[in-house]
Length: 116
Image (cartoon, rainbow, N blue to C red; front, side):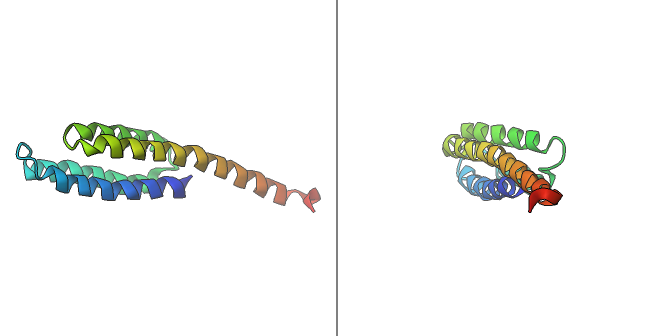
């Protein structure tokens, strides 16, 4: 699960950075505010890569996904991109857990003496 989720979060890191560049063109948003918010979101993307397997890591990932979709109120393209990454996040968590379960099952079978 960790590899799939981390890959999604690194992709989001870049999308948030590009969204910051787009948001800078909005005259109603100050550059400092844009980069403070984007910087925090980008930091969270990278920090969550190492926290995925810890308690609350996946939940924090979902909070980040919601924030990414909500950023569409400032950069409309983020409604679409945020939704795409939320679906990717769901797939990463869902299929990552299935892969982890399969690995554990295969490891348990390999450890059994009658497996040969």
